[in-house]
Image (tube, rainbow, N blue to C red; front, side, top):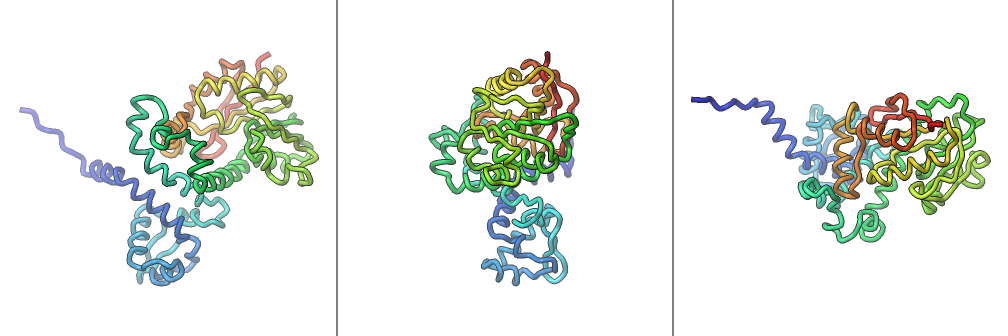
Length: 343
């Protein structure tokens, strides 16, 4: 007679918590939309006072704060008062490294309709977004989901500014006189590099409508305009720029064929020995794997893309004609792949 294995009570409790993960995400979204973190100052504040400032009912607000405090977002003190924690401060719009818009973006209304279809995406290997919404993801954002598109723009701008500062601090530009940021969005990385290195000249390459809204520092009349060039184009089709250093940051998340075309275009444009730095979130060997693997699954759902493992990125870069060297962390969620164009 065999004895049924016993269940670890801690494992059972943790699984129960995980399957209620949507409640935590919804609570963070509610706090961000209500502006709770912005209304809470540096002194312990009663729920009644917070509710008055926010225009909410006190009792459900207390329930929201109690749930969030279980995760270290806000903390309860004596007298039914709440105070900030390190995480809750990140929900403030004026925080130096604010995650308010990232929190909103990751919990936009469309996500709640897409996540339950993850099993279908795993079975088929395809994004389910067109089946749910009748059109591709970015077409939806620019037509039906315009408010979500605004949140996306703010989230990407905030995230780009923060990672640009980290990347500029990481990057050694000894011997580099010219740099091109491929698919660099508004050009926050390029602007950070030009500010830090007064002798550097740089090019921003991205789609025409993106380049048209580049960082004001890079546009005509801007503080860095004399050393910056804005080139509209699609890196999957052509990269008409020669430089000492090519930067490709967080754009190799489409299908592998698009990634191959982009890397091949870099190799075709660059001189032998030119330096190429690819910066990506990784789904392995990273201290932020819960975050990056979640983003990987969301990419599968909405656009059919994927985050890379270290090996998959090295394989694609090597096949394109790049000699891949060391891989370094830029911050807890980004890694830089150093490489040069083979002779």
